[in-house]
Image (cartoon, rainbow, N blue to C red):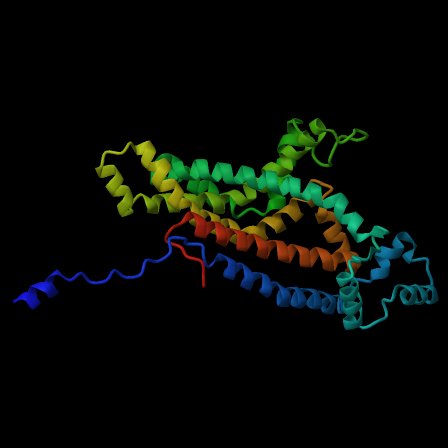
Length: 345
C-alpha cells in the first residue's frame, strides 16, 4: 500500500526545456547560404563569358563607335590583338577572375575609365531610386492591404483586387511611358526624364522633382504582388484561434488588428518581398532606361551591347549576389517575425 502510494506521488521528470531562442539556427543558415554563393558566383560569371563568345555583337563596335565603318580590317585585327579579344572565352575569364581577386576591377572599354569609377558614379542613383520606390510600395501595400484584408469582399477590397490584376499585367516600361504621356507631356506637371533640367545643378529640389515619376512607376509596378500578399495574410489571420480568443476577451478591434493580426501577417509579406527582389532589379533597369535616369541600368545595357566584359561581368555577378543576399535577409526577418517559423538547421 505504501509502495503504491509512493509511486502515485512520484512526479515524472520534466522534459528538458527547449531553448526559447528561435533564431539559434540562423548563423548556420547564414553560413550555408554564404558558402553557396561560391558555386553560384562561378557558374554565373563563367556562363556569362561563354555566352559572350557566341554573341552576335562585335565588341569593337562599342570601342570604335562611329569610326568602326571607316577602320580597315587590318586595323581592326590589330586593335583586337591589343585588347586581347582574340583569346578564347575561358582565357578571358581567367584573366578577369585573377585580376578580380587582386582587387583590380578592370577598365571599362565603353566609358574609357576604371570600372570602380563607373560604379561609384552610378550605383548611388540606382540605390536612391530603388530604396525610395520600395519604401513607397511597402507603405502603401501595408496600409491598403490591411484595410482590404480586414474588410474582405467589401467594395474597397473588390476595387483593390481588380486594380491589382490590371496593373500586374502591365510591364514597367508601359507604365513609364503612360506616366510620361500624362504627367509630363499632357499636363506638364513633372519633367519627363533625366536627373535635372538642362543646365541645372543636381541640387535636392531638382533631383526630388525628377524622381517623382520614376519612383512612382517603379513602386506601382511592384505594388500588386505586395498588396495582395498583405491582403491574403490579414484575411487568413482573422480566422486564427488567437484572434478569436482576443475578441472573446473583449479586446478592442483596433488593438486586435495592431497587436495580433498585423504582426502575424508580416512574415509572409517579408517572404514575398524577398522573392520579388529579382523583379525589382529588372523593373529598376527598365524604369531607368525609360526615364534616362543616370543609374547603373544604362551602364548595364551598354556593357551588354558592347560586350564590355569587365563591367558587364561585375554588374551581373553583383546583381546576382544582391538578390541572394536579399532573399537571405528576408528569411532571417521571417524567422524573427513569426514564432511558428524556425531557421533551417
